[in-house]
Image (tube, rainbow, N blue to C red; front, side, top):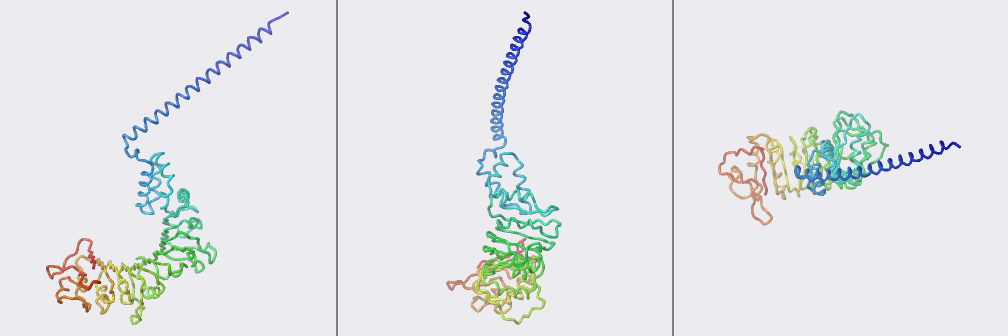
Length: 404
């Protein structure tokens, strides 16, 4: 009887057992080496961390401090540059990226860039990281001539919005009479044109809106929100404002406390019309040529701060009119910024007929002393006295600020 097949089978089984044992030994060695590799990698990471702290001390800062630094960097950056700042922060290292992404406050100042795409994908990626917090938004229109519908997708998070659009607005893609849901919006800047009349109620659902900056007075009535909630209005220096349009707007500003006006054009204005009484206004900034004309057409009994940024002859002529300065009975601060360093129009104001309650000799005005009574019956100087009657050359910024 031949026993060769059984011997071959037994030898094959021995080979199988030996090969399996060798494979098991190799697997165990691999596991040991992998464990050793993991240990070495962890050790290297620890060493690199210690080395990084020595070479770069900023890496010793806790995440809370880094969050404050990142938030400050974003808040101090111009809005149209903030996206680049955020990208720079997250591109330094993995730790900075993780810390920045984990803090929603860092992502609450964003810029929406209009390019050739329907939407700004980077903006919406950043918006997700804000975790629903109210945001401050600026528009970078580039060369686009209209706004895409996707621009308004984030409006429910807007706290401050700067929609400066030199090409004009096209809102006709919205349904007629539709309004945006703006529960957080407090400050709005709009430049330049507007859409069709069917879109004039676009901002009607903005219960917190109280600070508006616009280029045209007529636009304010078209925004759609109740003007009694407006506290601060800025008429931008985009172009000269018609005095007629401004005077038509003022009666609607029942609650405005802070008003800033750019250049004014007087064309077509009836100078004999009755003065408008604005009881709520306490701060008035006149920031353009002819803007002081508003003082001749208004009664401002509670005005406390008056600033004239481009003081010229025409401004002096307005202020020296009988009763202008006298009517500002609560004026506490007057700031004047001359257009030219040696502009003598400032002297016209100093030589203006003084109110009947002003004390002192007539020469006092020539030397720069202009006094108004304080609440206790005493006197306070509007302009400090000068040792010489010669006109004083102002500082390099051509400014002169007077606190009563």
